[in-house]
Image (cartoon, rainbow, N blue to C red; front, side, top):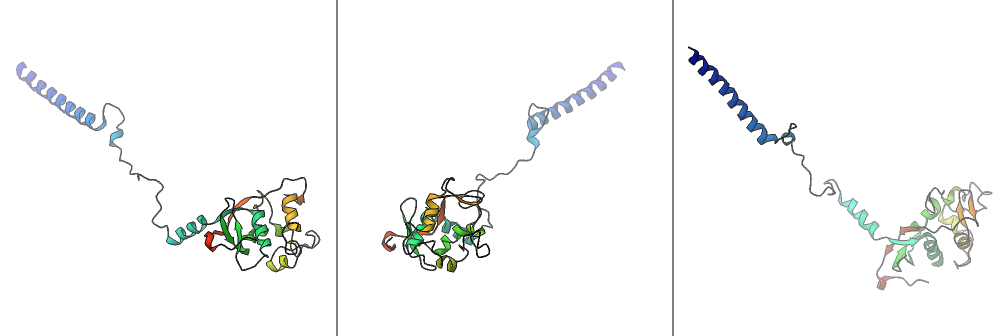
Length: 207
């Protein structure tokens, strides 16, 4: 009778040992010899190139970027000088040389932001028209830069010559400060993107 009990208990114990061994084999094959089963975590799908252009990127956006790429780098004062030297046209294109000596063309649309936009000549700067407009006659010394007509009717660009004009002297001899102009402030002549590059054969001779 005792032998039968030993065989039964031995069989049960062997069954538990076998089941435990099989579970251990399954765990090790799935999770390795660690207590945290990281191998069981789902894989994270990643694209090989994280900077792919999204599918929603339209053709118009590509065209705008190509147009910006074709613009020229030019100092703000040099762009105004080229425009004034060409007779300050409103709609006609005028030639200028960019910072690399390449031939470019611009229009008044490229020049007009230099009188209007804030933080263009230096960080935090107010646009020229914030002081030089028709509503502030005394503060602006009677100078209005808000429109092409107002600029044309003033004498700030000189009489056919840019060199020695009032605006040229201000941009080259006086710096800009929050209160206006000051000979003690450093002169600012920031580089910006304007106009567009043209082939040398098509370029209008620079005066």
